[in-house]
Length: 240
Image 1 (cartoon, rainbow, N blue to C red):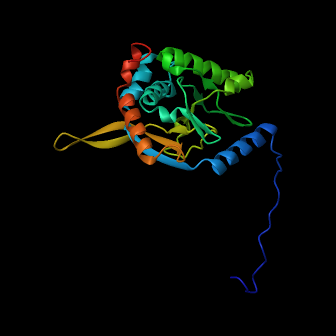
Image 2 (cartoon, rainbow, N blue to C red):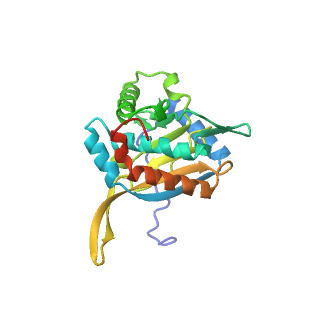
Image 3 (cartoon, rainbow, N blue to C red):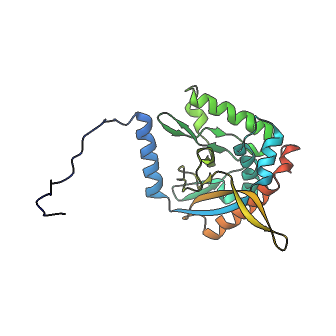
């Protein structure tokens, strides 16, 4: 107990290792600090039925991941809610025609988000092929700053790491970032007395409250849910 004869004083701390931040880590830290300092972060979450999402990925082949299907659905949601396909700089909310989706990729020094350009014009197979190419290039260090520029929204998928939900940080000057978590089985009523187990996924949308509101985010997530639950349409071509 404190003050007793057995009190050995404060706890000791033995340094195991000291790590100086790499230039990339310092840049990441500065950008995250800028994002939290300038943007008014709010995160809205929604659980979505993921049975069609998973089956679409399976039917499309081993080269098409859950992320690729979500990107196609995200693009359609941006068509309906263009305020999220945007940046906010110097007091100006700029909305863009192209859906340039940055996809967060973990590397040794931190996190980068190579940009898939104009995904609304691409088929599911094209999205998957381009995302895979960019991911491999980034992980191998074989990319340029051009690959990281021009994004209009970012997607971060922590599902493969077993995460159920998280609060993604907006990539400035973008207005929003979508977090994707792992698929989980949930019991749902089925008929009058039955129960069915269905896979679900949680989407966490962080947005800048200076330019879009909570009701806007809720509607955006509602549209995204509709598109994800009808994702098998992407097996036929580039879009609707």
